[in-house]
Amino acid sequence: MNAINNDKTPLWFWCIGAVALVWNLAGLAAFFMHLSMTPELLAQLPEAHQALYTEAPDWLNAAFGIAVIGGTLGSIMLLLKNIFAVILYSLSLLGVLAQNSYSFFMSDTFAVLGSEAMIMPIAVIIIALFLMWYSLQMKCLGLLR
Image 1 (cartoon, rainbow, N blue to C red):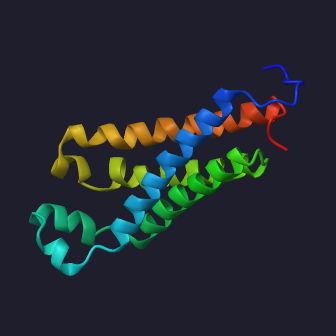
Image 2 (image 1 turned 135 degrees about the vertical axis):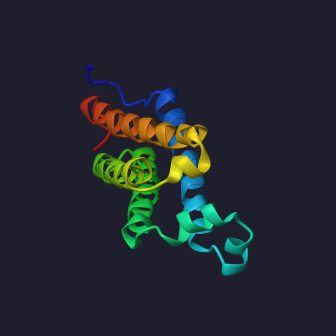
């Protein structure tokens, strides 16, 4: 991509940044809801779902946190036109890949929840890849400093 030489930031930049921030804020909300699961709420789930929750390793929560906190901060940095968006989106992608590697390869998640439960993790991976790529492109265009 060629560098943008004018001082006016294109509208599409702000639109993509705003959508990215809303997406990551939703992920952050899901993370906090996950962390605030009480024993009473957990008891309301079917036994197989409870096992998925209780048998998950601690590093999985760390990966989830890195994914959503990195993505949220990356989106904020993107909107501030800050170069750190690239690093934060890269960290977020690593968190997403670590988190979903557990779901896809180390647990019975999809046996319990069904194959349709793969849709959201795949979408999350694609969006995380896109946001990292997009931030790199914005750096190349000179929009991030």
